[in-house]
Length: 259
Image (cartoon, rainbow, N blue to C red):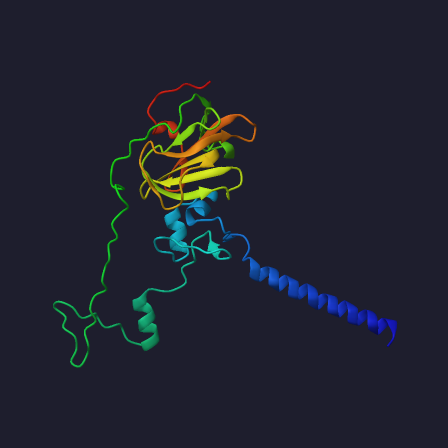
């Protein structure tokens, strides 16, 4: 076999291998707008990472409570495009005639037809005390180090000074929906769901004292205070409403001044 033929075969083999690798890579990730679930993730932590409302994220991915996800699962970070037409126009186009009205009061089923019972609507009650008016309290005792700013990613909350190991308390009662260190830039992090609108987060902790799914009351110790990336002892505290960061000082009772 000549060198020219051998070289051509090698190039062809290399091209096939590169194509196969590209296909494997495409199957491993769907590209921008999709997120590959890691073992430490929850739906709430993914929504927090991308400033999304967890309810929107659940809807876009067809997830119902308790929003269970699995490592390796692909999560859509955007709403799916509406491609289907209204049911009545689809039915008419397919059959050539307008759809028949559903049977019901004043419109009995046709002879020989079996009436379809209406779908059962199940209304899930909210978590314990989730209907109450929220009354926030300060999660730690200490002066402010940084105020809230939407323009800076590291200031989507406030930083409160403290001592290493100092108790970090829940600013309001709710359900722990994340407890771990899987979100880059937050260290040991706790996220608490207070109702359908509000979540709060407690970052840079030295240790975590609660687990996911645990119900906590206002003032319960959920972590111990750690230090930021600059080595200064602090708690980074955030409140989010409908997935978006809001200034915690609008909700916390007046107490401290900036140092």
